[in-house]
Image (cartoon, rainbow, N blue to C red; front, side, top):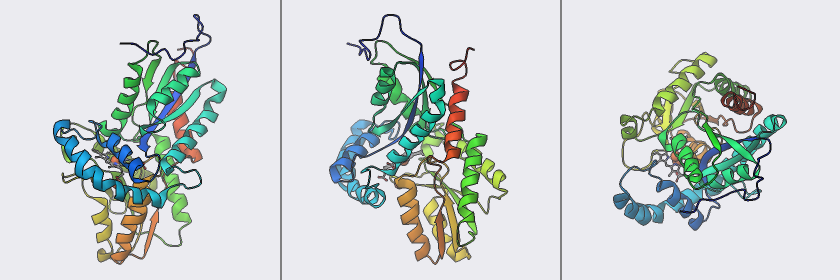
Length: 345
Ligand SMILES: C=CC1=C(C)c2cc3[nH]c(cc4nc(cc5[nH]c(cc1n2)c(C)c5CCC(=O)O)C(CCC(=O)O)=C4C)c(C)c3C=C
Ligand SMILES: [Fe+2]
Ligand SMILES: [Fe+2]
C-alpha cells in the first residue's frame, strides 16, 4: 500500500501549526439531467449507512428499477429549485455561504475553513486536501446535522476517516457532537419563526415541525435520532411558548416500503383542513440549509396537497442557511470544540 503525502514540499520542521474546520453536509448532484442525478443517487444509496441491506440483495434492485425510474422524478424536483444563476443546488450555495461566514469569524485566529459534501462534490477528500495544503495539522470536522443519525453524522465522519486512512502524515482530528438543543440553535430557530410570522399576511393556526424521517428498524437497532428530534422540539416549543398541539412534530421523506418514523408529515398536514385548520406554517429544524427536501417536498408537494384538501394559507419557514444567527451558532460550536487548540490548554 502506498500512502499519500499531501504536502511533499513541506519543510522538515513545520512552521506554526494551523487549525482547520471542515463543514460537511449531505450532498448534491452536479446537474439536473438524468445521468448526473443517477450518479448522485447511486453514490448516496450505495452507502451502507443509508441502506443496511446486503449489497448482494440491494445493488441489483438499486442499479435496476430504482436508478432507472427515480432519477426522472428527482431530476424534475431539482429543476424546480435549482439555482440557475450559479448552476448548482441550493444546498451547495448555502453550505458554501455558511463556510464563508464561519471563515470570516475565525480568520483573526488563523483558522482555515473549508466545506464538503458526503455525496457528490466537493468531496470530503478534496475538502481535507485543501485544508492540508493550507498547512493544517489539526482539523475539526463539523457535520451540519443538529440531530445525530448514523445515516448523516456518522457517515459524514466515516468519509473523512476513510480519506485519512490514505495519508502518510495524518492531522489530529476532532469531531463536533450533535447539538439538538444548543441555546444558539434554538434561539436561531425561534428567531426565524418569529420573523417569518411577523411578515406573513395571515396568522397560522399550526406550526408543523417536520424532520427528515428514518426507518423505524434503524431506531430499534439503536440510532438515537428521534430522541434528538424530540430534544429540539421540546426546547423550541418552550422558547416560543407553544404547546404540542400548536407545534406538532412530524417526519417527512419516507423512502421505500418499510415503516419510517411517524407521524408522516404529508398525511398530517393534508388532514388539517378537514379539522378546520386552513392556515399553517411549516418549519424544518433538522435541515441547516434549504434543499430539495424543504423547498420542493414541503414547499411544493406538501403545499399543493394542503391547498387541494381545502387549506387556504401555507408558509414555509426558511432554514437557517447563512443567517447571522446560524453563523453565531457555527462559531460557538467551533470555538467550544477548539478549546485547548486555539489557546494553550
Ligand atoms: C437531515 C437528516 C437526514 C436523514 C436522517 C436522512 C436519511 C435518509 N435519507 C434517505 C434517502 C434520501 N434522502 C434524500 C435527500 C436528502 N436527505 C437529507 C437529509 C437526511 N437524510 C437531505 C438534506 C437531502 C437533500 C439533499 C439535496 O441535494 O438537496 C434523497 C434524494 C432526493 C430524492 O430522490 O428524494 C434520498 C433518496 C434515506 C434512505 C435515509 C435513511 C435511511
Ligand atoms: Fe435523506
Ligand atoms: Fe424527499
